Image (cartoon, rainbow, N blue to C red; front, side, top):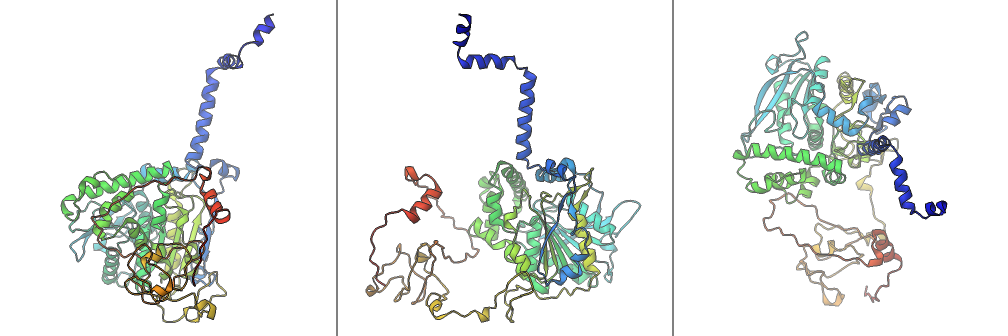
Length: 569
């Protein structure tokens, strides 16, 4: 009878009693284990992977055109770029690499001497020259100690977002280059480095005028000193955009891009995906808000300070500050306009680009692989790990791998016979057609040799403007003849205007859109944002049994019952 009584108890009661028999220390151990697994994945650690491989690190991947003289004469001699990057064992995470560099890294002592450079619009830029690396090894004595006929090469450093010459990674780079016998000048952004804003203008990701004036000034003052530049993070975007704008006409002999955002529009989407990325976005956004509020008294163009005071991300700052001061219609327009990925093909001087594939701020999705391989002046070096501007190596994390790579590359480039006036392979506006490079890694198209076949000619007619009504519809269209300037269509064509949108297209227009629904659009030009923008939110309720984007797409293509349409061609 006792056995029957025991077996009649609820299984849940039995499990609960058994659970109380387990020591609480075991529960604590299990909780800590699960927490460790969560944190290991949350901060994207790779310690176990490195432990298995004996902390040998991962090899550096180089992408370049096989006909590149830059690789043959310079990069091929750089052991760092042909080696491996091995992270500090206790910093095997892109987030730990990034955070430790910003807040805990022990930086070398750099005594700068400041030169105030005034721009034509009344702005002030602080140029910080490195005076010495330590008491025992004096280097240059500031810009006053550099003679006009000095032939010592000069490195211009362009810091990242909200960074200046006092940032840890900037000091690491300056210290290393000075030890190699170079002169270093840090071109601080407007309003940073302890200087005031003296004009109604702030820096942004595409403002190349300031660095252009600084480089021209240095070239004029020190005509015999070779000029090089290193851009980091957003400063890298500014540098590459400047190089693309100048082509072979720049005074720079060569340059290096470190952890560039490349495509700001994609980067904006990326930095909002996960909680950890949104944390970076918030930190940078608050820093930019403080930067704007610090110079509020000299920015009369900014009137919506209530919205500015509520900025909590980079996009908010770009919307309420950059777009207003820069006369951009929308934030996305600003991102598309200033992203340096569209300028990389026009770079006309040797350029080394270094990016970490696990960069938590600038995603690998933005890297323009094909454009870098198509330009013989560009070599792209990517690593599996490194974080954003981190690359801390060694047990004590005292050195940055990318700083060693930059030093080695610039020294090799400075001692090479590479002609920095070589024409960029993808430069727009070249008089000579670009032949197909059969020996290279890329394929270029000769625009003069592109001839349409008779059938294709019927489907490709160039026009300067496309009617907005048609351009906004992702469907197949035929040749529409008789289209008048006002957007109406001749009655005998059996076609009616779309959405009542007025047309800006010439009389004969053909719009070709693929069955995949490719949308043709006009490029947006920067202009003053409209003050009458409004937003209307409506709801779309999906078919209950098709509550999936994949089911919606597949059902439409394969199973949808379509209405009968008698077209007239």
